[in-house]
Length: 335
Ligand code: ADP
Image 1 (tube, rainbow, N blue to C red):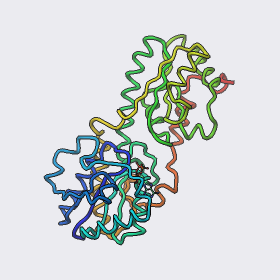
Image 2: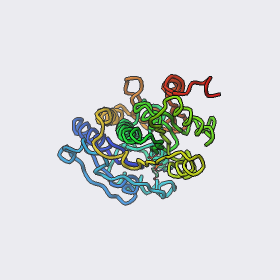
Image 3: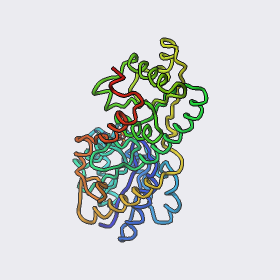
Image 4: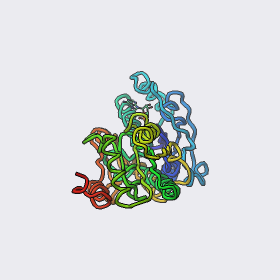
């Protein structure tokens, strides 16, 4: 192995820079050159390639975003695109490619592997944590910390005014950010994709819960965490509905892309550093079509296909605690 390529793809995640730095430093440590492709797969197609050395990744691990840019590239799904990428990689004499991104990016990596001979390794970078085979993805810890911080702030004002708040968080089709931000901030309720799939919450059941909590406590706030895409019209529509139809003073708060910025949490910087190095070492060990991951405290290699074919489940125990132990309304009273 003389030269490797690296790119960041899909939704950016805090810690992507730390992962890039780790890849470059590890490669240099083992006497390998690194070429970065800018703007994800688009850069592979455009041959937007820049050599990267240790000096190019100085002091970037404390910043979110990605200095080599990320992008979505629809065209990459086509066979011709993968063939063109393979041709460009070969013309630069690249032996292996590291893709830092989420499950969509891994599908892209697998697609490329059908048309290119080099080794391909994925590194899980997404705030959603919706990748099978790794305990956590890079960026997830930061997103939860940001959501928790926002929920704490909302609580201050909600409590002062005895108000209901609906805070909408990211997560794509997974409730990791929702569950863990709700638990870490003591939210009264959460609407998560996994729960909605099991049994969708009705507005009347929600109103009943809110009123019961207010009755039990006499006064105070009710903060609900809503995962994106889990209510038609989101937090804004739901709070309007609660005010208009049930006369419950309610305010929405959309966290949006704030969840992806600012200084990456220590856990993300460390995970990104470890997995970036792991990815390079996997290449040296001859691995191909796997994700460099951390599972049960060990660095592992997970077949790329498994990362999206299998589902990363929510922690059942956290769900139970949040629903039963921390629910102000006990089951018997709810009936
Ligand atoms: P993430 O990696 O964050 O899940 P996306 O789902 O947006 O992000 O995927 C990122 C990119 O990966 C897409 O824009 C596309 O270029 C590529 N990609 C996703 N799915 C496929 C696929 N089935 N085949 C080829 N490329 C894909």
